[in-house]
Length: 204
Image (tube, rainbow, N blue to C red; front, side, top):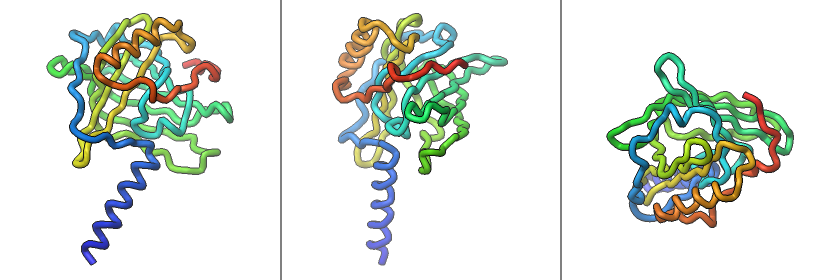
C-alpha cells in the first residue's frame, strides 16, 4: 500500500512538472558567473523578453515583458503576459525584489499574482515563493541576460531569459546576449521565442 502511495505521489509531481512547462536537467546546477556590481537603479524601466527557457507557465503565454520600479526604498518587478491570439491581458504579477551584493543575484522575495484566465480555462502555475535570478550580461540601454537554477533531488531546473529595452531590438543586441549565454555554457538554439514581433505593445 505504501509503495502504491509513493508511486502516485511521484506520478503527480511528474504530471505537474509537465503541465508547468518545467524541464528537469541532469546533474547539479551549472556554475553561474554574474556581472560585478549590478546597478539595480540603472536597470529600472521596461524590459521585453525575446527568448527564454521555460521556468513556470511561460510556454503557455506570449508577449512577456517586465516593468521594474522603485517605491519608498523598495524595488518591484511587475510582469505582464498577453494572450496574442485573443488580444487581451491574461496575467499580471508583482514581486518585491532586491539585489544581493554578496551573491550578485536579484532575489525574488514575494510574488502576488492576478489572473484573467479565460479563455484558457486551465490553471496557470506560478514560480516558487523565492528564487534568485543572476544577471550574467547587461547593457542597461539595450539588453540583459538572466539565469536562475533550482536544485532538485533528480537534477536541476534551469531558467534563462534574454530581455531587451525595445520590443523589436536590433539583431546585434540579440547576438550579444546569446554570446553571453554561451559563455555560461547554456545552449541558445533550443530557447523559446517570446513572439514579441506579433504583439501590440502594452502601455504601462
